[in-house]
Image 1 (spheres, helix red, strand yellow):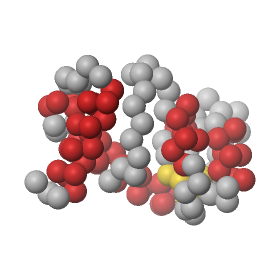
Image 2 (image 1 turned 45 degrees about the vertical axis):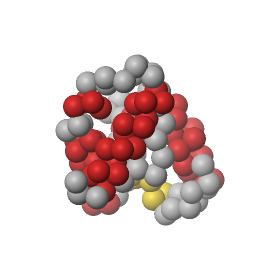
Image 3 (image 1 turned 180 degrees about the vertical axis):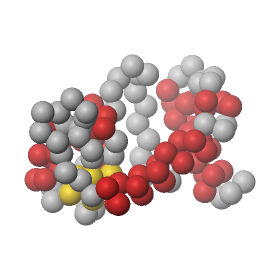
Image 4 (image 1 turned 135 degrees about the vertical axis):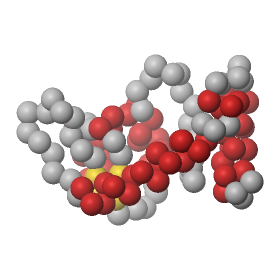
Length: 116
């Protein structure tokens, strides 16, 4: 289940919001896809004492080592996105304002959590 929801423009990259999402949260690992592969972001995580489990982009000159077994647990986030897109209002983005869209996501998250 999401801990926080940030709404951005559709064409914005996820990495631009990554630092805002981790804030002061304390965790041992951060599992993310290749979209979060950035030396700057990895350094931020390292300073906070968080181990990054992020595969390197395919065009990296030096490959990045990461825990592939732990990375498989990232599918929980992907399953959430798949479930939330079952709600037609979210999948088709009916809402015109970001406030209403964020509210719809929150409501859908609650429905999923309650198994409604």
